[in-house]
Image (cartoon, rainbow, N blue to C red):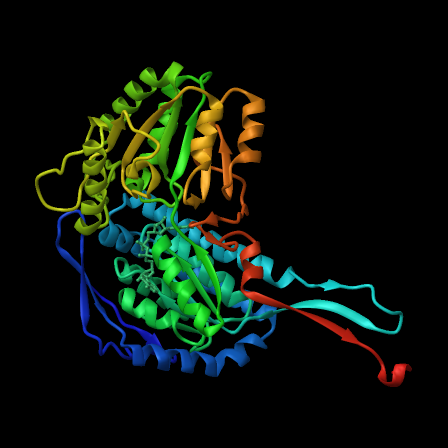
Amino acid sequence: MYTVAQLIGGVWGAGGEGGELVVHDPADGTPVTTVPLATADEVGKAVEAARGVATEWATSDPAERAAALHRAADAVAAVADQLAEATTAEMGKPLADARGGVEAGIGTLRQYAELAPVRGGRTLHGGHHALDFMVPQPRGVVAAITPWNDPVAVSCGLLGAALVTGNVVLYKPSERTPATGWLLAKALDSALPAGVLSLLTGGPEVGAALAAQEVDVVAHVGSTATGRAIAAAAAGTGAKVLLENGGSDPLVVDADVDPVWAAGQAATGAFANAGQICVAVERVYVHRDVAEDFVEALVDRARALRTGPGRDPATELGPLVDRRHRDHVHGQVTAAVAEGARIRTGGTLPEGPGAFYPATVLADCRHDMAVVRDETFGPVVPVVVVDSFSEALRCAADSPYGLAATVLTGSMSHAQRAWRELPVGTVKVNAVFGGAPGGAAHPRRGSGHGFGYGPELLDEFTATKAVHIEAPGGGHW
Ligand code: NAD
């Protein structure tokens, strides 16, 4: 059982007057974590304390901050197994996936430690006797509010980039993975000057109290509804908002591809992490010519998945994060069936403990169904049959979200049309996951705004200043 403590003003164990929350293992319902809830007053005090050390951290040498981040990455690597175990215990994903998320987080910390000090501004070509340049400076106080679905990788990105560029950070991990956030914060804090990192714990109220503070940046990775609430709060304080939010990523299956291979891609994209990935395949538009074989093969893939607790190495499909989320997923499936969708496999609530939900394939779906348009965030694939590639692209583009999309096609001209026409941040052709290191994109519409990843995230946490210097009286120095 993990007993989480907050970190406020450099003091572990501070605050928590708002009560306590217990997190249960989604595989069997046993309690795993107790976590204190911060009060609004504690949140205010934490921000005040953080601001008190902001100038000192902002004016430290960039190389010194980079060295601290390298030490922080070492400290995270030293507790990598514990972090993975805590992730699996709190949100259920298979242990190997959790471990992969920790490794990704460590890699990101190291990348930012290398990139930040070599990143510079620009010199400008002004008058002969003048000096003109543009220089990035830390923004100051950053609130980082994070989700549970890949807690270490996502948090390391935001925290690493914000810290190494000279900002102090108030970290509010998800109330569903607080022990994971606490273990991560302990490791990072061990390598940083006291007070540079704070940890506030609790649920939406604590996040809302933090977003309402006079901070300089609120960085949020999470749902679209929360992102919008945060943007509204920040409009009142003038804080910059960085939002990486929900998605409903389409998978387009063209007429000329092998339907069995395409089904494998769809299964990987829709069932990994039980569909709880921001860029999971959420809806499929398959050409009529290959639709029947594609759905058959997808059903086979879904049925073949080994379901079980994440700590069992044989498990391929773990439970959903909790029963509240399972109710949301099952509610969408039930509504789709009421609207005419046909369950080809899955779609029923299993007996027994935990928050398990079967891999589910829904045939006979229409583009206007809620299960197709909204984010499900579960192991559910609604399949819509289309008559042309143009129709598929049109449907794929017609969404309140704009995170990512995948197109499976043997046609280079279709691939070219897809990346040019789809209004999303990331377009993948013939691979649901993958992409070169350092890739970063602007999500669109309900999926957020700003670079949440890659070297460009360093720019999001700095403000660029333009400087013009002349000698007095137009003369010489
Ligand atoms: P969520 O928005 O409910 O919670 C995320 C964080 O926001 C938590 O720490 C939560 O306590 C806090 N929060 C909740 N309400 C708040 C409020 N009113 N004000 C301030 N903070 C508040 O999201 P979640 O359920 O934890 O995560 C799942 C969502 O995250 C999905 O929609 C998924 O697509 C998205 N996600 C997006 C990305 C991306 O890079 N685009 C990555 C991972 C997850």
